[in-house]
Amino acid sequence: MTGRIARLVSALALLTMLGSAPMARAELNQAAVAFKLPDKIDWKSNPNNAGVQSAVMVGDPTKPGLYMVLTRWLPGNMSRPHWHPQ
Image 1: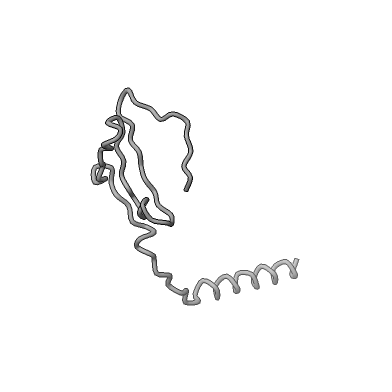
Image 2 (image 1 turned 120 degrees about the horizontal axis):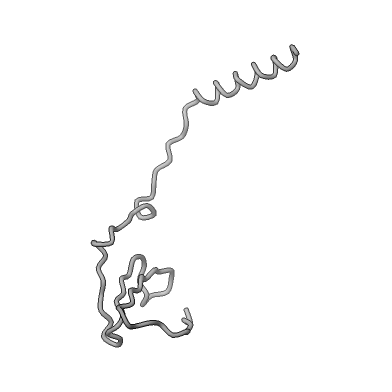
């Protein structure tokens, strides 16, 4: 029983020391945590397809690299199966 209590006291002491040690403060990348409310999204109409609107959220689709585009289908429209080469 005393060995068990000693281990418990040691574990509590270790947790107390770790809890009181100063933690390094991590800086947040503001671009990684930015968000837009739905009413603030800048939807653009597609001149080639009147049934769809899109909004570029991150990046630039015309340049190499990652990007994200939201697509909103207007009532009565849909996307047929397709693929993108990028």
